[in-house]
Amino acid sequence: MQTARGGINRSAYSVLAVLVAVLAAILTTPTGQASTARTFPASHTSVPEGSGNEFVWPVSGWVAATQVYATGAHHSGSADIAAAHHTPVRPARSGRVEATGWSQANGWYVRIDHGGLDGYTYRTRYAHLLDEPRVSPGDLVSDVYDGGSVLGYVGRTGSADMSGPHVHFGITRIDKSTGQDRDLAIPDLTMGSWVTAGQYIPGRFDGLTPIAHEPSRPFDVRVTEQDGLMLYETPQRGPEERLGTVPEGTVLTVLDSHQGQYRVQHGDRTGWLAHTGTRPTDSAISGIRVSPEYRAVNVRRSPGGEVIGVLPGGSRLTAFGADGSGNWYRVQWPCTANTNRSSTAADRARETGGCPGLAATRSTKYGWISANVSYPTSYFAARTRTGRLAVHGDVLVDGQSYPDTGTTLDRLRMRSRVTVTGSRNGWYRIDHEGQRGWIRGWYTAGRQ
Image 1 (tube, one colour):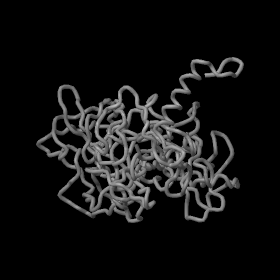
Image 2 (cartoon, rainbow, N blue to C red):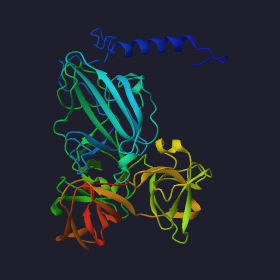
Image 3 (tube, rainbow, N blue to C red):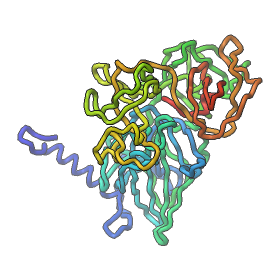
Image 4 (tube, rainbow, N blue to C red):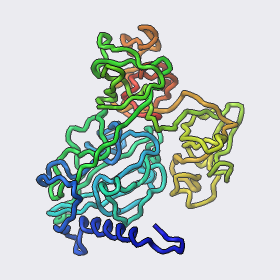
């Protein structure tokens, strides 16, 4: 947008001026009351207020959690939307950025004020972003223009380190007369529900004018099971419903989702398969393990850069891609008072760095380790996303593709931590508190 002399191109300036004017029109006036002189694009859908067309989903993915955890971190109706690492996160509605920052629970987060026409104003929040948000307080952001503003990228910062990459998303309504706020439950939102970026969020939101509908983009996955993934006629996965095996490496477009099952078309057949036997095609995540022969290895701020911490030999980590040379892995590691090697105070509020002066038991950080001191592994950490999840016997039946569901060794609580040591047809073989068995992988959120 700049000329060789640093000036702004006149045509680009005109486009920018129009965009700013349109965005300003949809926000509140200086008195704090929303303006009724709102300008919408030509594609705006004219429907009554409060009809469920006021917000759109900020990212495509499956809902990994909706209910209150034991820690009280969730309210009923909020959503953890599991998506591929580094997927862009966009606003659910045009508005003004109210706050951004870092917290131990939320990791990197953004909060947006959307104003309101009558007695209410609305706020949305987006937590566990990959790194520092791409917006700042006071910025105008849009859900419609130019594909929508990018707030940040899907990550697993804060308390999401064991849950897999996702965005914690919620909507809050504030009563203008009393100042009281209420976290809104999104109707019919259940674990395993599929949501698509740009499609309307269900619910009635009084005092907000409907917004234009952005066309959704397809979501492709790649089958990762070594022996292929079984396709079923329904999500219930009955033995008599098997339609055949989808080979490893096959790329499929997700048409729908239910309780962690994806509906896809393969050849001339349409059926359901477990999401845990797939990986988003744009995901660069892999499992690695620090070589046990080393007592400790260095974690660095950048490839070959300053040492910010150490990891014990044998540690299992998730790698979020490599540098251009392939000699360094970007990892998420548990920074503690004992493993921290950074004296930079600002690192406490950064997603990459150490944890000097740590008060809590640990802080999850990003850093880089050498590929020369680690090797690939299929092991990774996950958490359960439902209560009373059955752990079946460590025996495979039916052609070595299905665990023995006739034997139940234990039942896990919601958000139980497990180590996944193998998978078969979407099932996970796990170690949990010294016990080994099989669980339904689609009821977990782990590496994606």
